[in-house]
Amino acid sequence: MKLIIEEDLKEQESAISYQISRNSTEQIVSAQLFQKKDKQNLEINESTSKGRMMREIELFIEKNMEEMHKEIFSIRENYEEEISQLTGLGDVYVTIIESLKEEMSGEIDNMKAQYEDLRLRGVESITASYKQKSTKRKRLSVSSKSGF
Image 1 (cartoon, rainbow, N blue to C red):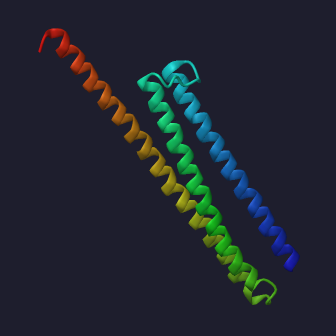
Image 2 (image 1 turned 90 degrees about the vertical axis):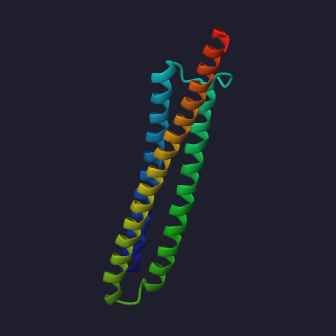
Image 3 (image 1 turned 30 degrees about the vertical axis):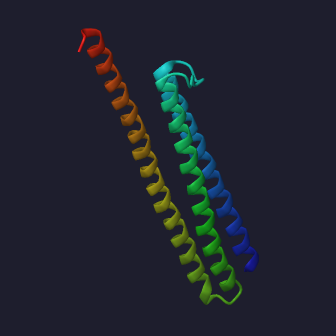
């Protein structure tokens, strides 16, 4: 029985690791497509405003992913500790263990959704900030040309 539970935990761990790497890859591809669409070139030229903006977005996403991975690890560690204490105590605890696994999965899914929302709002905020700066520069340029 203990072997089955350990194998199940390993399978879940593999599945979660796969999901994390898949999500990371999807976000990287999404960022690359965003860059390609805007510039038709994946290399960021940091001397331009757009290049600085893309670099800031990239750094923000990396930080967001790092924090999410740390939180996933913490959640899994807490649940796995509790599950390991209940493992091998009898058939009565099998249902509790399954419930804890589902609870852990739900908590991780909710946390991922929160980080995804945070990521989207952060990217929007960075983009809006650079658009606002660009608009100000254009206004200053127009007013200096007109003599005001």
